[in-house]
Image (cartoon, rainbow, N blue to C red; front, side, top):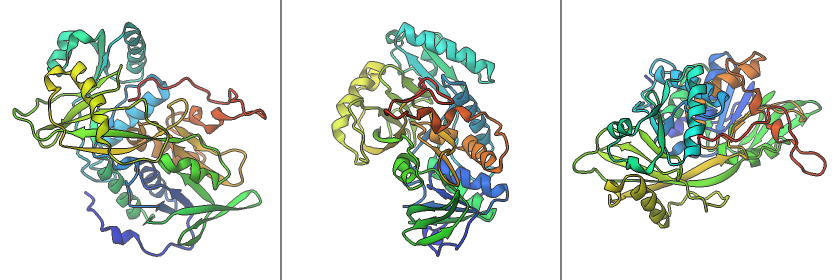
Length: 405
């Protein structure tokens, strides 16, 4: 098992050179750094704040393979395998729990969509299934099953602790020779002819031949320094925690009302985590928790689980989702810019759960190998525009991912 490092250990001098510079110290960047370093690449991981201080700083993160897009299913399924083996490789306790994910479906159209998705998921090795009302009651006795037309469930899904994952990957990368530096901001990507030659930071210049952009909600700004337009926008998401309840809640799945995006699941000690996406949230780098959100949360809670409508919310938390126009990630190597610039960002709420498999994919893209999962459809080229600014049907153009919260 890895042991936590003191933050000061990662605030030393920058190396003069690295084969690859990874920008962003969240779950994606740490996974990319680990997989590259394990593959023998000389890696420098840069984080502008502390590790996991952005979107990966949330107290708990879902892991699942229930998606409507086959590639997202494959990334989620492979990541579940890697999370289940995390104690061995890279070696850390991430608090993985697998009570399953339960999607509650209020409309007939939702049922049809999930029936099609479940059939596709089953073909790809995911043991998801549609449930009867009685089965929902047994899994989560708080749910008002009469409000829903159906439900979908996969028992292998669950949640883990993102900060433990980031630290586990970062420490694993260091054991393989990588350098991790925090409180270092990438300020420019220097090119010469057709090559990337250096990354400039607030602490100086690092010579390099390749950059991987994994800056989460801040990716659009970082990408412009490399001459790229990556369409990633920040949106605030909030969650609340109850105090310990008496009687203590029974063990329930990660439960989601697909109609409202309200979700809840167990949280230590003997409490519940509650969340919902506010549709009125503007694009902004706003991470201040706002209790004015509570009436929206409580209204959705009362509709989904009336028995819980009056539970107290003892504290709350706010963080950022990094959203793309089609709610699918951006993974690939940039075209039309000098040198080797790779990117993995814009995961629209499912970056933590896909981080292990994405690290493998970026490792292989850098090495010129075919990744085990086809990520070509996640190329940013799908958002290419013509001279008038109209989005074209570029390579990998896909429909929106439906299974987001």
